[in-house]
Length: 322
Image (spheres, rainbow, N blue to C red):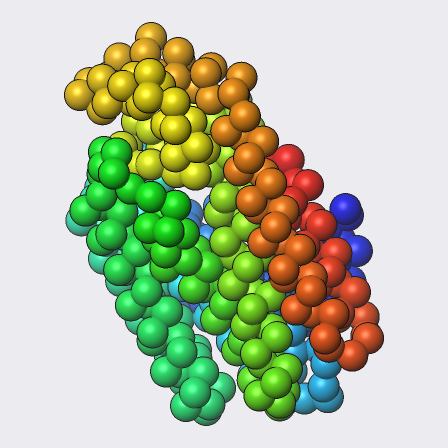
């Protein structure tokens, strides 16, 4: 699925979002802050979340300025979260580029993440929509809670699928949900339409994270921009690991590895086992179920270019290579 085809109904508005992000990251009065922001925003990804905000607003005529402002805020929040996550994980690289914490130090990275968090909130306030402002604030809480929950469950072999799904909702699904719902609300969508878009956005967010967790195991370091099996090294139990641990012998290997996560020989044995078991395939199947649920939700909306793009976005998420 061609990503350019997906964003075509909102390509002009997405360019406006990119301009807002550029203006924010290159106009700081303090030269060092300007340098930090430039580094952080130069590493941004495919703008999937702001594109979602724009597309879910496309079912009604509306004021695009508020929606593009919200879309920019969503991406700013995402970038701030990545900076904090990399700092907590002590990650050296992100998408093949040195992380803020690795280049400038952890203290600076935390402060930069806080600055971008706060700035994103001021953008949301410019929408003037109390519901959206409150939802955005709740999302910041969810993202923080998700990271705390992940930290609290490091190397926890008793994690189950429900706990995993709740954690990835907090860390990933919540922001996708806010991205989609805010676009709908700011465009004047009805409560019924917002409900469908909420279900759609949540499910693609969960599926997106599951696919990322699969990539962590079956892609190479060049593709990932970080070491293969980073989740295992950090003691994070993901869906493929949960499925693989149904084999008690394999679970024993994980338990042994978590005692010494510097044992790369055992690490390679574990990743090879998972890639040759059905754990990856079962994880894909679960993500496909979520994607189908998302498609079912959006089918309830009237046909337009945005609806077609939202359906195509589902296909892109499940078939993307990285």
